Length: 519
Image 1 (spheres, rainbow, N blue to C red):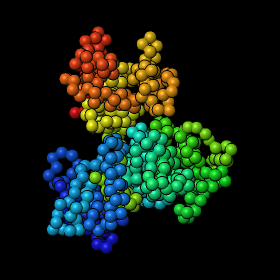
Image 2 (cartoon, rainbow, N blue to C red):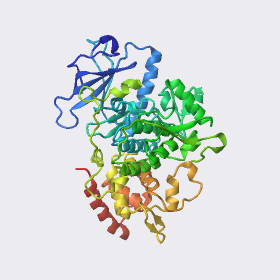
Image 3 (cartoon, rainbow, N blue to C red):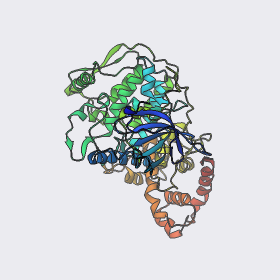
Image 4 (cartoon, rainbow, N blue to C red):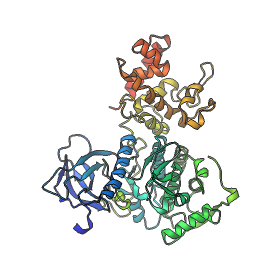
């Protein structure tokens, strides 16, 4: 390593907690990243990526900025557990007065990935990736989980999308992420110009930062999908400034959206919807809906090789009067380091494409994937079961057991006699309470699709988990009894009420819990 290029110099063999540094990976303006090994690991990952952040060489203003980014990323990692979100293995503060340059440094240990999708694209020589459809599907699944949990990523791009050894995707670098406050959040200025929507450039900077909505992630998803499928950005220009100008002209109705003709039609439409010129147009396409579309398109394109030279095809022109309407302490690292922080370039073969992973990969820690839980509901179930990590009784396998017991995973269930509908058997007037504020004005009418029904099961469980903490017995069973009766009845009975309907229901629920609990 060349010392002058490293923000934090850490010698091979240096120990942080249980981790021993082996070699450097990358360095940026705020931090340096090193590969490390856990020599005595009996369980868990043996290899990790360690991000080091110095404190002694920063000004008070820099420390304040870095602390804010650290808080955002830490909070996101605590809240956003998902198979397609990078996992944190531990955080540490170096206590080493004998090494002043490291003393007080903050260190975060993360999963060690093979490389970023940006590196894979660089190896592809201007072409798309052969497994782009699957990668986009997994990116959408991770993004849908973020959005359902009330977060904006804020910096979605290939360098922040990592590839694990099995080829699966992880979203990473949450230093510019934020939790929504209503319909929007505030982020500090920053991000990749090629992946920011045009309205972001026009937003003023308030004392809280720049206003951003989840639709900014949808735009970034569209740009990223175009890159993965074709190796090209969707807007022309040699420089980012020129591409920004082209995107701005398109958004104002003065230009075209041109996508490579080699991109299949269903993916062209997918990208075009993500790149709707304004917030309102993109709001019509949620991450959950796009995840469903990506899954369907990926299954249809599984044999398609998109690694071809791209040619352009104008697919849509927007004018002002024809726009489509509707509707992650961790240290934050500059985007260049984020892509390198958890990949091993010395082990990656140039141009290698990861083997496709099993559709169950990564979900085994949440529930038994060898059981009858439908894979198309995996992400929704994980989202529902990870909404309140401070209450360990609320888990994805509990959500799955409820759905199995309620409907046998039937999204079309229609039981007007009991006024219960959909995969979770929601009663409309009960579901109404858990909908977003703007949708609570009227009682919803069935059918209730899975992407509506399943996440709100998690909201219900998280709503009542704190109220039932003092009730004796299995907290999972008490929560389900509340689901089928009420919190008042469970508290009055000091446990599961002795009701005929529950005598038949609860044994089936317990059997499903046992069947789905990870081993």
